[in-house]
Figure 1 (tube, one colour):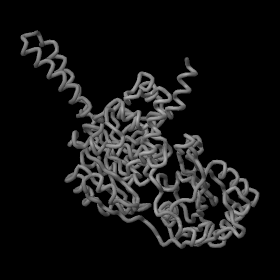
Figure 2 (cartoon, helix red, strand yellow; figure 1 turned 90 degrees about the vertical axis):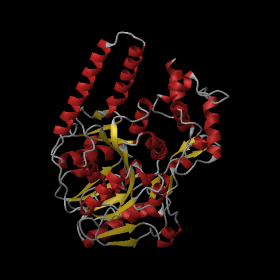
Figure 3 (cartoon, one colour; figure 1 turned 90 degrees about the horizontal axis):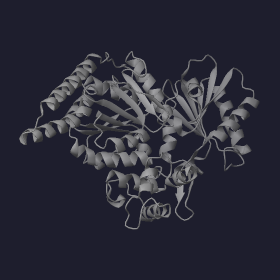
Figure 4 (cartoon, rainbow, N blue to C red; figure 1 turned 45 degrees about the vertical axis):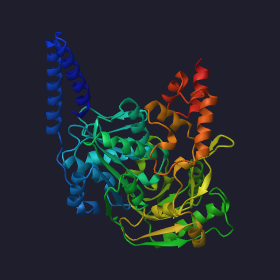
Length: 489
């Protein structure tokens, strides 16, 4: 097993040193032989337990199976650019498993959100005829469904980041799939920078970076011009209608925008009674819109919320079969990383909550902002997967054309104190020299060091203190972690 190789090699080197000094080493040699035998038996068992693999013909990615397999075998890193509905998230780990990956090590598959990791693990396990926690498992915060015979492991980006602290070489994995990389979260950017350095030390590690059709050349260039393969989506024509509120509205909870949502629902109802997906910025907006739609008294219609803080049981309602029409009210969790089945129509409010840090006030905020053109196109792609669809945007076409092409990477708008602290402990050098896709602003770097010095996590020469080491182990912002440690003492 991969995870045993480094430990067994160290034991062998230790025994050779003892032998060269003329010391007794027979007992150690016996233990080493037993460990090697146990590892080999585990490998043989895992090879025998690989489930039968099949690929659904209706998914576009399955039409290019041979080409994808050849690229994975020929290159250490590939970038797979797939449109919504291509099947990349569910089929890629199965493709790797069919190539013999996931036996000596695990196929690690990251997702930006917990709900997506759980849902994908359930789906892939079902397609392999297994139960979650066996051939396919998942690990998210507060839940670990990974066993010793797990071949494919779904997890959040944060979990992989935490594992790097305990296992810098990521020896438990023989393949890593970094999914939804176009979201450019802080975790994703840090992981991609770290993996660029790691693949030089781990030539046996295969890396697949998947992205929507949003600037894939940037990822290719980051990994020394890694090959890009593009897969089309399973999409029917989608008509885009612009239906801004008559009186204008700066917030989804305003009466004009609430009325615009009701008008859009009525307009789509006149076309067909298909399922709808309404994109809103947050939990409060979802609750208020749900109440507005219930007061509108739509016949034979179920209104279902979907956001990250919902319980697992509530989130799973979205995936269950239903007979009546369904209107799903979702945050951007349904934009790329999660596919809501059966959607015919999309209503896009044009807003999302985007995390921003002010280095002047030292406050991390979560303001509601207008989404980028790329995000709007991703939302549009959520319909038109089962038949021709309609996307209604609750803003003008001129407003759409004036928006930013892409969402600004999180590393350029967040507090860097936590990143600096983690990099110090991992021995990755200065943040200004780290191979990020987009380097952070030097003002944010200076502010991050200033915050760490103020809370006593680093000293003047930028060495990490004992307190800093404790803060790094807490899965919260260093400022909040400092408060917790002070409260505990």
